[in-house]
Length: 384
Image (cartoon, rainbow, N blue to C red; front, side, top):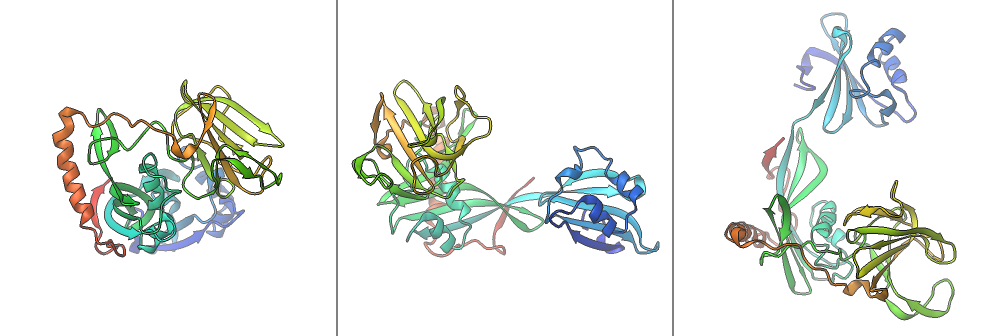
């Protein structure tokens, strides 16, 4: 069975949409006439929008082998998870079909030699897991300051469609040992909210993220006397510069109100300021642009994309100049304190301990070597 049909009973012709090709061009290649093309494109846009076909998408024409190759079905694969079937024998009736999806568990462990991204990749797993880890531990571990020899262990799930792996991951549990400081991430639902906690039952999420973007490289730290790379004179640099490619998403490190959105030609370039509370304000400078629709006065949530790394204003290359102000005075962003969210309640401590003990045992049993999960051994845990 393929596309919900006994595929061997048909003569199947495949094609791939090419850059600049319209649906009419494609269908003419399948020997459709103008009237047939018109009928196929008349289904509601909610099912099939001809203006949204994309290069690289696969299409198939299923013909009846016993009836002089009479066309029976036209299939458009709109995504890895879904396709649209046009029943030609039933006046081109269209139907969107969702493919069965399942999540399969895997385990991986490794040691950092240069960066977490490279370490996860070297261990045989997708480096996208490094990004997921940075999201979970972003309040408690400074991934810009990790060192050679730091270790990680991850139990994760990967999404599969018809035995094809997708680049969609979720972390089930994890641990990270940075400079001999071992932190566990244990998921637990409390009062309708699923969060990650350490083994003491304290939430890993805090009021402020450790960094405003997924880790890259710190190119300049907080200083009262730095040689300015453009002006070539010593002056204070009351922020942290994160070198990152142009277009890298920049997050609000905490919830707050946008109090400034402006451009400074001989300084910050495109920049934003956010007031988080009566004490703290943050500034994001040299942006290439802002999140769509964002304006002064808007309230943003923690981890919301507010802009993109650039090199506008007085800058020698793409980076984010990030600054934190405490009661109006600049402070080192790397030392900002962040209060965690509500810990595990007394009523939930026993249930949490059972979950925590089980996952810690599983994490510690993962050998510190290459990825131990493979397509042949990954266990199916859930079907959607």
